[in-house]
Length: 344
Image (cartoon, rainbow, N blue to C red):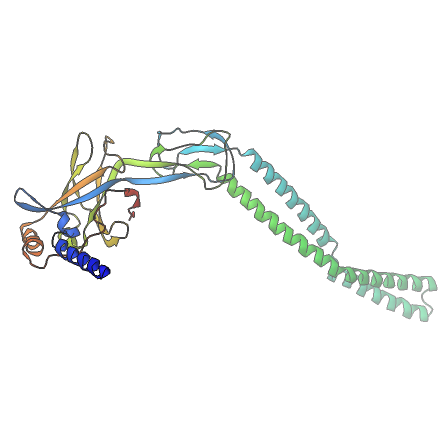
């Protein structure tokens, strides 16, 4: 009985409160000077940002930039010690030279068709001497010499063919090792080409922590480059108001700074897919920031003025209709960590 009573109380309370809870769209609709406007929460991101990543495993020889320095894309930020790489390259080149000499020796001592021609000539010579010997036109010594030469060549060729398989095996191993050495050399050359750590974009170095003599691994993050000469304001738009905001539309932006900064911008892009982190669509407004007064993560209020026709539609839909939304917007509070916003 007690459980039934509690459930009934909760249900009744929810019904009573549902008429008082505003939808996400209603929370963004404001009346200013007798005009209906949309007021969106937003935050600031740099127009461009990149990580400073190490390119190799090794020791840093020289650091050319400091934290806070302005860099341009392609500037050398730090340099690795090249000497260990150059030593390894010379060692691999020595191995390559040795293997190439070994393969060259096998090629010279190979035999093949040239040996067969010599044997054929010796055989013909023996046949001629044998005929002359039987006719009494050649001596026994001449016959024995021709026969010895022919038999010697046959034995030599047989030995050559017997060892040819083993020699081919050795050559195959050497060729495989030679390919590995060439691959190792290519990797070292690539590593040598990456001994300068370069700026990936224009901007200012922040959180930079690289020091001369420091040993690093490849792809370690050592800081960021942030370009705040231009910024992008990201606004959170309730999905039901999508039809009232257009790309190219002017908006008024008030930044949460001291003193407060106000700017006029133009909506550059609208992402119509609701961001799962905040339950809103995202609009993007780029702005110039030459004095760097607006910093990343600064919060902002974006005011979108509607034309008369849209104002009428909004009032009719959200103020005058009896079918006002009754759901509780569980993601309406976006005052938290703006780093969770997806960057489109």
